[in-house]
Length: 345
Ligand code: NCD
Ligand code: ZN
Image (cartoon, rainbow, N blue to C red; front, side):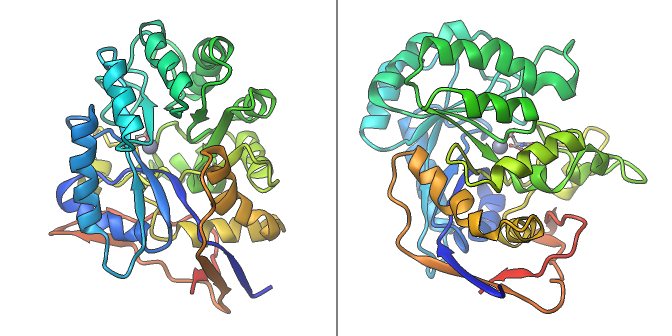
């Protein structure tokens, strides 16, 4: 198979930032994807309908004329979020979902939620109106080992929410462990998960490969090989509860190569090339379309895209562009350590 045509994909988890970075990164997503869910963790965060409308306008301005791209906006949940405002923003279709960041879990999450019980009334409203809840699933307790934070979150927080509100539409985002795969598989019908290309491509050895590798540092952090294998198995299986959310998360190189480097992998540019290669290596190319173009839209009760894209296999490995320029600075583009032969035609 040297050419495949599939439904145009969607990316169900992106970070576009703002200002000059936004202008540089939006075209990297809008080129290959039809729709994307845009994270609200700006500084300050996207807290209300007005913030979301304004932010959406700035994103649309950065979409090149040739691209047909729709950003889906999200609100950042805090313990002060007003459930009636949230409901109104959703019913007006200004926002698509709400994002739960446990306070301090990741980049720009300091105003997140400390105690899940305080937002249960909001989650009840979301269940009533059918608004999806997107979750960064890690506990933030510093006494819990960083490699265990997702598993402990599932046991202590996610399971609590799923039992109380079995009909709430939930996406456990960027899952990284075999425990998460199992929980989602066995969980409520309304529960699904997204998976990133970098968690499919790398295990935690990639953080310390001959030296410290800040560009492979993201949250949730890369895990052991057995977890990567579990992610690969389920992502390439066609299981409808699992789909792409790239978590493309641009940071300037100076902020990554730093004594306290930021978490995040910028992977938008070659996202589809990397994923196609991974599926081919697993001999699972026939399931690629489900993972990147079908399962996510089903979970979100959306129609799949009408447009198609063609992926073409090259005779020589692709040479990746290393950096994306932003004014006089750069963002490092994700490049896994195996040869990649597929490109979007
Ligand atoms: C994201 C970011 O940079 O905003 N970083 C990351 O490592 N994934 C935040 C997030 O999604 O956790
Ligand atoms: Zn993210």
